[in-house]
Image (tube, rainbow, N blue to C red; front, side, top):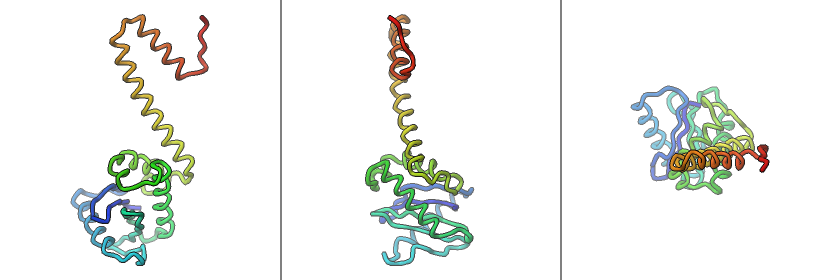
Length: 181
């Protein structure tokens, strides 16, 4: 897979992932060409196109088009399955994903894509494994925000109070630690 693009019916690019090195100028041309090819097609048309030396596979979900550029020897049906699996992962995370989820949480959409695809190849096929990885990253992100705010508060406290606070934080995060009073 050379690229994966998500764009709306109005021609607004929502997500782009390039798996081969391409200049910015070429990216803009490819994006424009993909929109010009895919958007005017009728709903019952084939989801496969030939464009230059690439196969283009696309699928419309609600108001978004998921479009992938493949090499000629790649399997189009497998690419459709990859697009569908990505939509399933987005649905699982966002709960019936919509265009606004992609707009306002684009970093999560990219993260989910990076957990699923690497270098244009499927990295993990299991929805459960990808979901667990995403959940783990969310937990880590939440913990880092909590830790940073606690750490800032600790800086404002006296050193003895701060040591007590850090001990309490350790106790909350590691249940294997026991304290004898």
